[in-house]
Length: 140
Image (cartoon, rainbow, N blue to C red; front, top):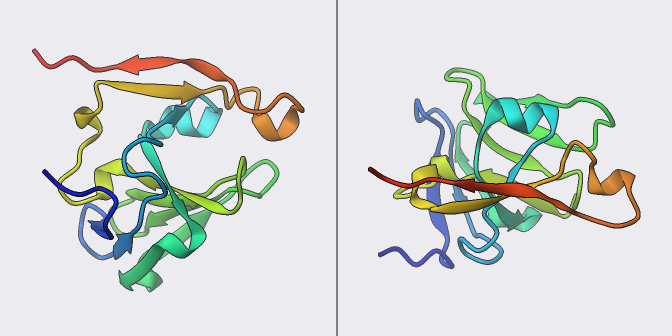
C-alpha cells in the first residue's frame, strides 16, 4: 500500500506531462464538484498546496482553461486532453489534483466521494462550502 503523504508521481494519459505532487492530507480530501464544468469533467480531485506540485516534464504541453470569474485555472495536456490539476476558486492557495493522474491510484479506489455544491459556489455565498451529495462506487 502506498504512503499517500509522501511525494507522489503523476502524469497525463500520454505521458507528455509528468509531475510530482505532495497532497495536503493524503486521500482524505477526495471530492467532486457539481458545477457545470466539473460535472462534465467528472474527475475526483485531491488537495495539494500551491507549493505541492512540481512539473518534472512537459510544462510546455500544459494548456490552461478558465471561465466565469477566471479565478480557477484548469490545466490539461494539449496532446491527450487529460485534466491534470487546477488552482481552486474556492481556495486559490490550493490545487485540486486529478486522482486518476497519480501513479497507483484510480477514481474507483474511493467507495464514496463527497460532492461539493459548486452550482452554488462557496465563493459566491457567505455560508461557505455545502455538500451536494455523495457519489458511491461499488465493485461487482
